[in-house]
Length: 292
Image (cartoon, rainbow, N blue to C red; front, top):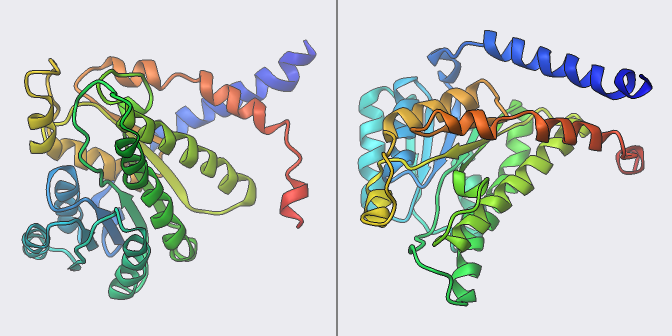
């Protein structure tokens, strides 16, 4: 009975409150009007579609990717669609110095930052792992470490705006898949790092939301070429996927699931992990760190 009173009842109350208020939240496009948003990996695919949705909502948009030509087209289209402003800075996230400098420059161009959308990845061939540690290192640096660098650079501006970090991940970062071990490792790392960081922000009262987006197969050109003849599944539309990411970010959701299968959110969105994390927080003495 003591266990019920001390642990299970508080968890039940918190869970019910969470689901009740989440169900009553509604997304409105004006939530993004005038917001200053960075989108990485934005010259094509989901990143490009997110930039277009944000432009239609009247946001300021700063985009980056390796292709300058592709970025120029995206910025031009964003302005046509009604973006408050649109800027691009071309570069590679293999260069962590560029990643840090890009955030600073984008913030200067827009006059601040409200939302950082981390979407870029390095190319990862589908194959069995043949002990190539170089591929693992490169994948982790681009798909994970650069995300950390970008977030660190953006945090001072996001603290000022009570902004948001949006991390684009994958089902391969929640469940094991063959042929993509380095890619999967980088996506699992995103969950571990940013979910832990979210808890730290909660404890230290940092009002910056972190939304982890778990995506299934999306019909981007890159994904379709990479999985052709290998992965047998129906791909979800990139336009709708991009919009769902933006909606979840605007509503400051902890996780967004987007996949063709209805089972994805049902199976991965279970409360078991939340309950364990809630219980784990009670075991820490945070005063030792907060008061120092």
